[in-house]
Amino acid sequence: EEEFKESCLEGEFDPEKAGMQMRIAVPPTWDRELSEKGNVPTTWAALLRAKDEKGNYTLPYMAMLRNMRNILLMGLSPSFLRSHVLKRLTHRGQIQGSGQTPVSLSHTWTMLAKEFDEDKV
Image (cartoon, rainbow, N blue to C red):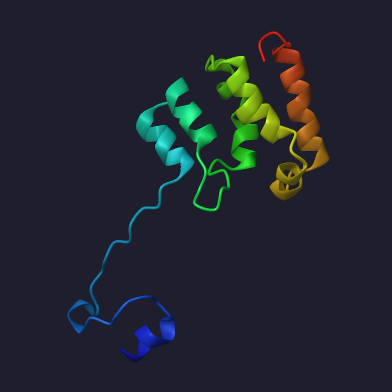
């Protein structure tokens, strides 16, 4: 019981469970959701729209950058891409909070410019 108190874990100490191995819940993540629901347009659209209770996107900026080609090849509508991808890609706060280097961002924009013209996006 003393160790439990020192651990600062939530809840009450249960002496019957002391010493037992227990599983913790697997947290939901964007990559688990993609694996479970498939690399399909509906899954990507849901991931790109999803926000947590604080209003933050649940798909990390770096994950969006790394999967940009897949996202664009999903055939999502240009208006959806503008409002959920391009708007976020160019948002100063998102860029600054992403931890991405200017070289990484430049590489992403160069790749997008080479593979996708304005008509597609």
